[in-house]
Length: 337
Image (cartoon, rainbow, N blue to C red; front, top):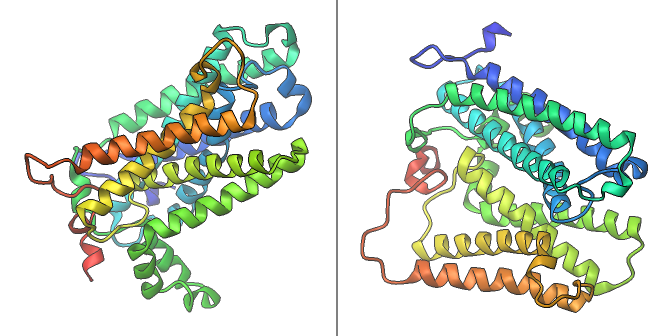
């Protein structure tokens, strides 16, 4: 394994931190699956309901997805572009660890609030023990990532992205070589947002279908609402994580398009938050039980947020646009080839 390590000018070896993050993610996922998929354990879980469950449900899917792509990228660890790959992978590990950390905070909040305390039993103690262990692991790997962090702004000089590594790896497999070449990668870079939306809808459809079957939903409006909410969460995750870790280097975009995308992502985040805290946001003393009211509150909050963000960003600028950040055109010279 030592032969795989890349070091920067200060001799730091973030590969160890990345592997630590992967181990932490595996442990977190194992405890999370136990707490959410086993009915007996779930009944004793302090964080079985919203707002805690809204966060757990998101990270339960997002964390293994990030862990998988990080693990796969280690197969190209020694390929050309090591410094870019090292920093991008460390950033992706940081996003994954941040998601785990946020979830642990919500789970601790459920424990402190003694949510569902009458249902606590031996399994609750097991889950809290897992929570303690996951918290210690998360703090440790976060410190390791922080020590290996590179100076801010170095991402503007990236010349490689994860998509390029996919092409590199697929070139070794004759069956995939024809379908995953440079032309296909260029197509994905030009239409990254379309790809993100498509993947989000497909993932949301799978989750919604499973939920509807498991809970025996028959209300079409409820199913459609679940599909929209899940798609919004997945899309926000895709766009934000791509901006941080540079999975797909995107070509230059117009200011209007960047503003629209920012507004859409902000609306998606607002929908997820409104869903998590719907009972607290709903006016009046009665709980929110009506599906039309639920749709109006959550999707209305997302729409309003998008309009506010778009209106603010489209207002006449007093200063020129700042230099493009990760994922914006000139910041990624490889998109110019």
